[in-house]
Amino acid sequence: MKNELIARSLVFGMVVLFFGASVTSAYNVEPSLSAQPMNRGNILYVGGSGPGNYTTIQAAINNATNGDTVFVYNNTYNENIDTKLKKISLMGEERDITIIQGQTTAPVIRIGSSDVTIAGFTVIGTPTEVVIQVASLSDNVFIFNNVIKDGGYGISLLPTTSKVTISDNTIINHAFIGIQLQTSSYDVISGNRIENNGGQGIELSLSSNHNSILNNSIINNAKEAILVGGITSTENTIAGNNISHNQIGIRFTSAGSNTIRSNNIQGSTMEGVLLQSSNENAIEKNNFIQNKRQAAFKLSSRNTWDANYWSNWIGFKLTQPLFQKFPKVIGGLLRINFDWHPAKLPYNISTFA
Image (cartoon, rainbow, N blue to C red; front, side, top):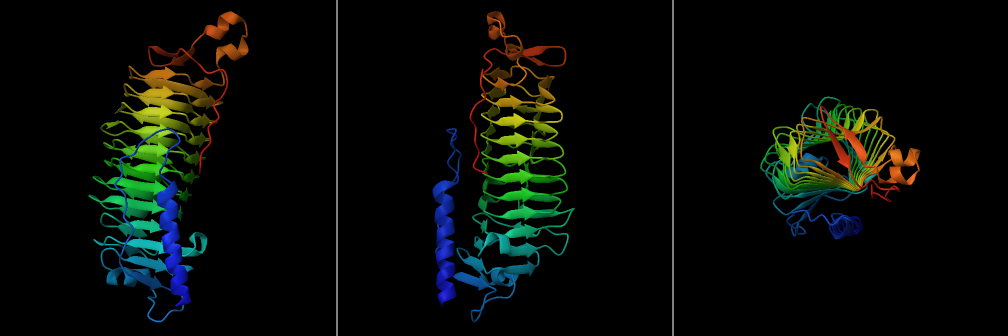
């Protein structure tokens, strides 16, 4: 009984902590989210020493009904799990030592419906497969406070998902992509640490619109930190992120009317920002620091660059008053763009990841 009271307190505390603090942006971005109601159902226990506790997570899920919470005690669980069509919460006792280790080529965790919460686990995949997958037509899904590692793809949102919140996770060491959105909209990706992935840190593909990528630390990924592309992806906001030591910081392909604002973009081995066939995007108040090529564009027009800090701006090399009025030149294919108001000092941008 004592353990069950502790578990109930942990579940309540995790929900209050997350929904009280994690989706507020310091950059006045208002994500479109439906509030997740606190589940009023039963709590099913996995592991631990209580009478009647389940020995596998899947067995508890199979016996859960909509609104229930599956609480998992600290241990290592060697299984792949599927929430099926159940609207449930899956909560681990302690993130670093409540471990789900995938055993097959299926997703380690498959979220099969709307209104599902996953929190408090270390989830370990296999090098070719997805660790956490959100099925098509799912919305109001919350994935927070997890370690997600060693898979092919960390988190994958399948086409027609929406209003998924991915917050305060550590997403590391995947063979391909840390977080992948495919025709997914109105999602919030915030406060995550996304590092050492073999492809992109975050990829928005096909037609992914109205997403917010906020306050993440995206470091040491082999390709782009953030890739936005596909058929067309519009009205996405990338703000407040620390984007450091990736091949390319941010790349847009066929992406229009997006905003890149108040990010640290530094140490890229190629471009800090690269726009390809992408129009009417706004790039403003970012720090571009010691990227091999700070920014470039190809077959792109009507993009605006304003008030960014450029570590290689000519005004830092030639201090005469005349050169202090020079814009920053951004080179493109057969044309150039200008940042007419380059910042004289770097912005103080901090993330919560």
